[in-house]
Image 1: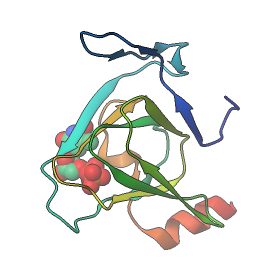
Image 2: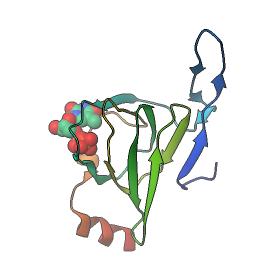
Image 3: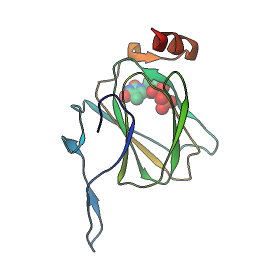
Image 4: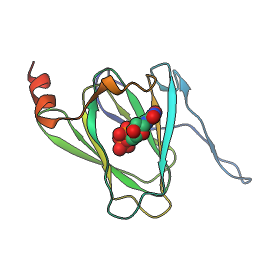
Length: 135
Ligand code: TYD
């Protein structure tokens, strides 16, 4: 994976008649030291999560169950990624505006983050984000 580039990648899969297994670890799908993992679930139909950027945090997002879209803005253009497989990871570098939407019933959005939770890492104002991207 190229540094600082969004990447939708395959997470290793161990196929097994007893049920499949996937894993991710530093160097295998994960380029950063994971400091935190959180998940979003029980999202009511039509709700949107996210809608902010992170100054430092990098992350990998996985649709562990069900499906949803991750919409990313790099300061110039928007790109939509539809996640619906538990063996697909979306790597998001720092400084991307991102939101999650179109959650299916019972979907689970797993986020592996490179930082601990810090409110001051969030950029919640889109205009400010655009300004910061322009430098
Ligand atoms: P937020 O990151 O805004 O959620 P989303 O981007 O998915 O819409 O977080 C929602 C709330 O949860 C906010 O009050 C902060 C809190 N929170 C934590 O306490 N720890 C965490 O690791 C995260 C991700 C959120």
